[in-house]
Length: 146
Image (cartoon, rainbow, N blue to C red):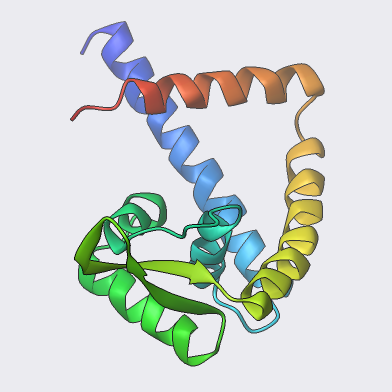
């Protein structure tokens, strides 16, 4: 095993453990107000999307299968947080948009979650380290395989 091979795998393991540790902390935090984090993720993805997003666009953002995202959107729709609108560019498709209540829930939960994220990230990392981690993470995403 080469040094770079080992380093890449140790780095992945550390990154994975850090993400999993923080995700568990965030899930247990109680900031969600009865909204599962994945559902919040969809509301967050729809924030600022005046024309909404298609299911396929939400799949990429929420990292779920089409069946999974369809069920999740249906639950949010039943709760009155999102609605489907006809896609003006494709009569067979619909776009998912936030309702007024969905925007209010996202903003409320989002403020609490953002405070918790800032607390968790800054208790162990300096501003310079946060900037480095942000840029390194962006580089990993930019180097994604098709």
